[in-house]
Amino acid sequence: MEILDLPVQSRDKLGSAHSRRFRRAGRIPCVLYGRGQDTVSLDTSADGFANVQSQHAAVVRLELDGKAQTALIRAVQWDPFGDFVQHIDFVRVEMEDEVKLSIPVHFTGTPAGAVAGGVTQAVRTDVEVFARVDSIPSEILLDIEALEIGDTIYVEDVEYPDNVRPASLPRDLIVHVVEPKKIEEETEEELEEGEGAAPEGDPDAKSDSDSDS
Amino acid sequence: MSLMPKRLKWRKPHRGRIKGNATRGNTVAYGDYGLQSLEAGWITAAQIEAARVTATRALAGTGRLYIRIFPHKPVTATPEETRMGTGKGDISYYAAVIRPGTVLFEIGGAEELVAKKALNRMSHKLPLGTKMLRRREAR
Image 1 (cartoon, each protein chain N blue to C red):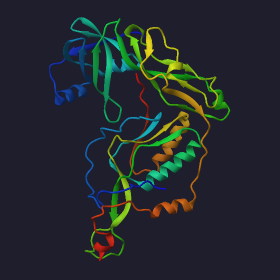
Image 2: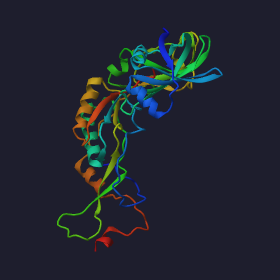
Image 3: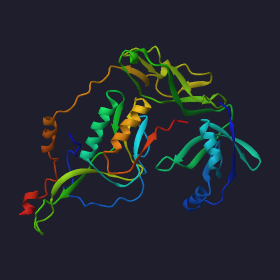
Image 4: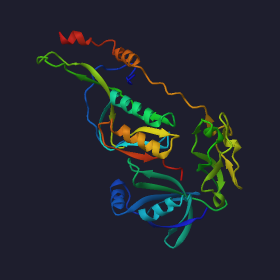
């Protein structure tokens, strides 16, 4: 995975009010910590970070006051509508460090079981791995073309690149092909049966009929 | 059958106010696509059920539907032609209280076009403005 450069500035204005002002000006408040060194508050441009995200980068080279620092993107906070990045956590790393992170899993091919009428269920869309910083894969590609109905792929079945090992349990399910579920349309009678059942209320409370009289 | 609570601590709670955006339940967690509310309001159990039925039909056996909301709130109504002063009405229906940003439904394991069609049809059954969301990848 290519390591992208991300220019950052140190930030001395802290707190939610200042952070809001940064966001309004097209900047994203960030923080850098790790390796026993002091925590530093930073900010970066929203456009620059959007470029990093579009390339699915896990590690960036932060350019701070003329010095370069390799950092892992540990956490990204989004606004409630998922449109804008609110805050980023960076962790200092060196190229030979081993880090724990989630890698997205992508599937190739249509399973033979799906062609025969089965349903492909991707239970996990990412896998937690321990990886060396210089060997972090951008994705894990799984060829699922040979899967028949009832076949499964577990975390232990995946071939990982060099310097990458799984952090999830070996028998964690990633994808399987199952029999299709039959659609059961509810009849009118079944719907009416459900209407009558009232939930159990407060036992001490007076009934509605009492209060209406 | 419409969703309803199994038991209630209080029979007739106050209506309350809906303040702020959703700080939880605002990301696609289980499926690949989600329907996110853009407004605050109540979604009744009947509306949730109507959306579920239309999604089941639109998905036609493919994929899986996840309902992320539940109608916890009992809502009372006074019967028609009732004179003033007869007290608070009976429980009429149950509603889910929705803040802007709440992910209402999710669909997993379906083709994008099928999922979009299902979510679009579901949005027509709801009283709030919605938008479609895609699951955010690990990176």
